[in-house]
Image (cartoon, rainbow, N blue to C red; front, top):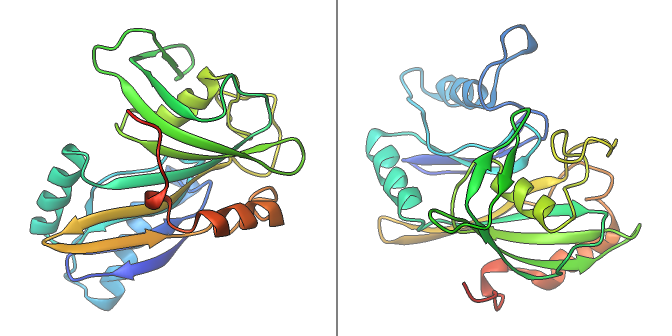
Length: 230
């Protein structure tokens, strides 16, 4: 369900598997929060865990949990001020209206739990992205969100004509082994110390393609790229 990437006195960074819900799902099983809390309490029965941010069920990758109240408050402020850099990987199999740049606009609820991107800019969702040609006439997308809207990246790619492969809401005709969205990298400063984490997708036929690994090896640290201007 998850693997531990790093542990600090105040926080833990884990890599969540695709298909794992953040919260418990009744008879279906424990969610990520419960699983991580059980893990840290196996080491210390009195240990606490605080949720800081979350990923959609279909999305795999890096998640931070605070282990202290001070940590929770500090990370809460970092996320609120957009001082944590987040980078995601997605795969699309349709021709996009643009191959890199900026996707920006307000988001509104649509139907069946979906959202849509609007032309207005009152409180916009903002996403920078690059894309790279890979096998099977697909493209690998490297995404950097500058806001934290629900379904932001899924809606952003759908808005340029290339919904994420395997997305059960925005690409219902795509029948594959998983939804191809992965929280790939995090970069932030915590109490004066810099932290950088990356984690490659560990499952998904398309993610494990050699061309994807070659592209990521060339990128190395995504925060060093010359990102499109906001």
